[in-house]
Image (tube, rainbow, N blue to C red; front, side, top):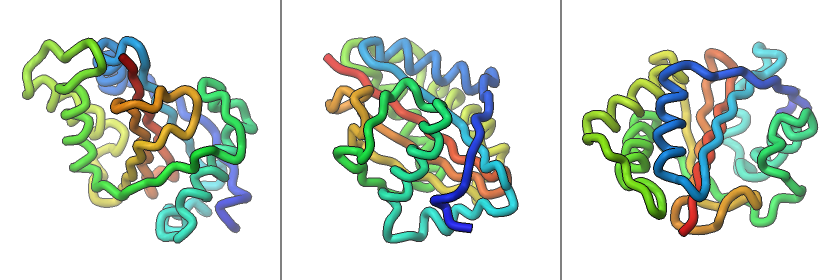
Amino acid sequence: MAWETMSFHSINANWQSIERLLSTIRKTHVNGGVILKCFEADDRSLFRKRIFILSNQFESRFQTFLQTVSDSNLLEEFDLEFPLDPLPTFSPIVPLALEGELTHTILSGGAYERFRGSVDEARKLTRDFMASILENQWLSASAFKSDTPWSNWFYDVAWDATYLIFDDKKARIWLLCITDTD
């Protein structure tokens, strides 16, 4: 089965560690925001992230994935129009580095607000968040980052980020988007 024909459903991920991280980012990105979505393949036995991530068509597969889940109204916040313009460009990032990137995002804050806690508090927030979504399966996950504003939800300035996290064991794709503006 090809990725293009797969279907996904949304997972309600309002766990305490996730909500703490999202709330912290919302407090510093006051003119923008943060969105986290989790999607699980309807047929988990067919989900293989390698088919998606090892493709030289990663970005177009991302667009196809977005079309699939937006057809189910699972991405209403983004008010998507296809084809995406611009089509985002993604770079691979290991999950442990993603934890560091999110810590940096918290510490540096948004356009007008900064995190009022310590480095250790920021690290704990991101460590708990990543441990929750990966269920401590650090080496079996893959992550990707894009700074491309692929929807009008983004403000197309310095604080735009999209993260995709693939979890083969649970057949899940996590979509984390952050934006702010001055």
